[in-house]
Image 1 (tube, rainbow, N blue to C red):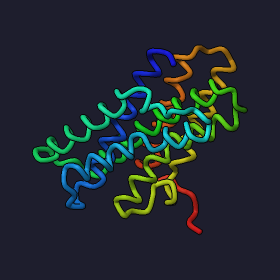
Image 2: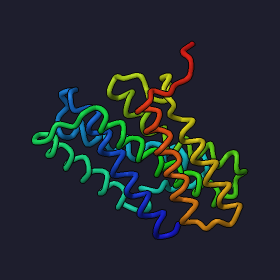
Image 3: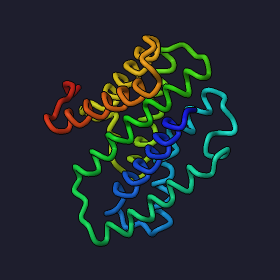
Image 4: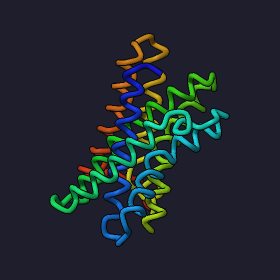
Amino acid sequence: MTALLYILDLSGVAVFAITGALAVRHKKLDLFGVVVVAMVTAIGGGTLRDVLLGRTPVFWVKDAAYLLVAGSAAVVTVVFVRFISFPRRALLIADALGLGLFTVLGTDIALSANVHPAIAAAMGVMSGTAGGVIRDLLANEIPLILRKEIYAIASLCGAVAYIILLQANAGAQLAALAGAAITFVLRVAAIRWRWSFPVF
């Protein structure tokens, strides 16, 4: 993993930990409960990805920085929430940022495991969405990925763009930034203009 991707990975962990803490701010959990939800949100998708790819021990066991970043982000969020009111849209925007970052990282890790590009894209989507699914379930909410809002599709578009740019020799950094940006922009646009699929 390049230095840029590592920084993006830690940034994604921090962002998802923040969304996990914010998601349960009205659930009357103690600090330990908030930190647990935040950390599961931050590392859940990547853990599932590593297990399916046979990358053991999983990433946060090899590098404790992930747990430290996730825990610190959760605690800082709890402190700031006492003084600053975070609107629901802030949670969605932060989630979109984490979605973009984890999508690219998950796809890159899967590609490094020499899997088919289609599997790599699926692993990218899993990395970006599974943590949020666990977060929403723990918060007793319907997971975003199961609602009519465009969520997983935004992640898939970012993963596919990342793979295409890599295969076109556009450069790893440009591909990573573009893939994350595409996911983020599509998700934010879906929030802003309420893009969605028809409800069954």
